[in-house]
Amino acid sequence: MPKALCITSLSISALLFIVFVLDIVAGIPFGKADFLMDLGFIICSGGLGTLSFLSLREQK
Image (cartoon, rainbow, N blue to C red):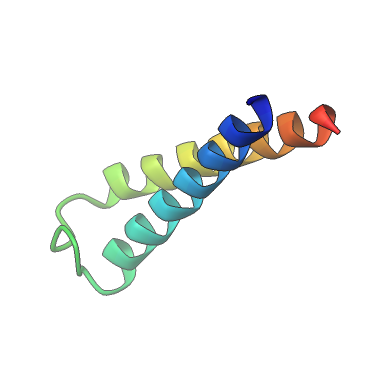
């Protein structure tokens, strides 16, 4: 079960990263509402991805 949670959080962080990078580049989902909010979510999704990857690597 812990591996499934790590993989799920890794995929969610990748999805968030893609959504907010697309918002900065093309303004597709939110219409470029706020650059700092997008940047904050990109940093947080990178942190979540890093933590879930390291946790997944420890599970093996």
